[in-house]
View 1: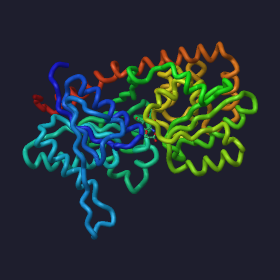
View 2: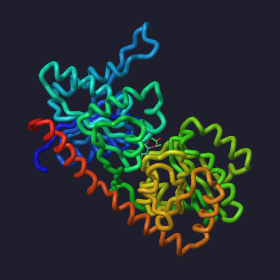
View 3: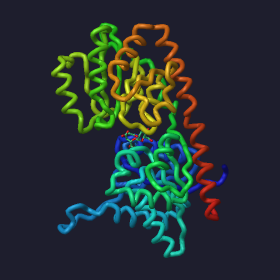
View 4: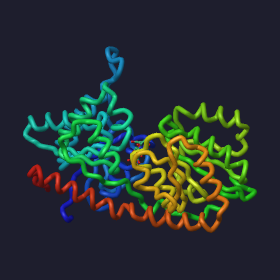
Length: 384
Ligand code: GMT
């Protein structure tokens, strides 16, 4: 693809998976010469430093005594109109349907009334469909804005199927998987970290998430409680969220505090993954499982639930094991047997890396670029 595009990216700027994917996609597009404009209420967490071709437009919602809730959607729509018009954007790529797809629709209508058509591509990430989107307080708007996007992508086949079965969808949905940047996510020598965390050569188990109920982080602790009866081990819990106080209580109750470390939100996750022996992802719901892919890229096998799109990433008996949601006993048994069998662990490490390589950003980025072109062509939008 030769012609460079001017792309507006709307996302949540937080540490969540959808914001991570949006930010890393934007940076990669900019590195290929496209002009990328992030439009959101805070600088995205993974957008550090200066990047040629990357712009950030902060959306400020006006405070006014009448507003119990500042109307962010109105402020975002107004900002989109402004940025599309004055930066001459070719398309808007919005990540996470709520509220971004509906807001983009509003901006498109306003711009159309002024003689400019801006195509919208909506990427569905997971909870915007599974947990939040189907709630009656959101579902009519979610369905309408999916059907009225110019392009729709989902991050796994399972998420596409779930969307089709949860709503009355008349639009085509393209599956474009999450991706991994191996220039960052690769196993590095961090033996000094390993010595500090596991001085007696204990095995290191890791979990990263936003500590919401859907992640079932308490299962990670239940599994670890069984593992430590058989194998000297340490558990690293990375991230933060509403479940953390409850998880800390569990550690105290089970007398595991000396073996479990809460590391909070971390920027350099790849450094911690580099010293891990196993990653645990017992989610109730997971459209893809980017955290598992990041672990696999760092040669860490995954013990997971078989929820959602996880089986499209983690391969049973090869890159790890897939168990029924909540089957803590089997997950613990699989963890123990793998950690006890060094040869198998090494084989799984290699398989995990090989599997992660299938999701290299170098493969997925052109798929997005081609999709952008296709959507623009479908709408007869002349670029440049
Ligand atoms: O994992 C989360 O709860 C955060 C959430 C988000 O949208 O920020 O992540 C979702 O999007 C990721 C990137 O596409 C996927 O890899 C995660 O599997 C998905 N999470 C869920 O479906 C629970």
